[in-house]
Image: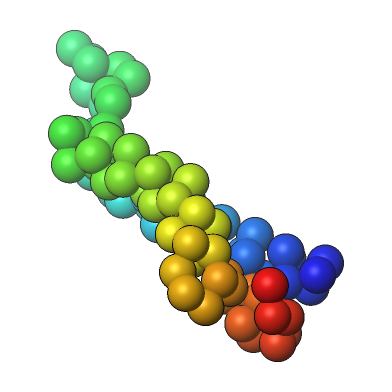
Length: 79
């Protein structure tokens, strides 16, 4: 079960990293008028969707008939 948790943690971490990378890429360059710019609406939206995806990951996968997350499936844990 610890191994499955680690695999699931890596999957959820990848979801978060994707959202953060998109938010950073969509942040405009700093200017004199705006020295600390925020991510654009697209970056913020992707970041929020990544957060919701990471929160929904175990709920959705364990709620399916198989009842396994990717980590449990990879290590052959039934439920």
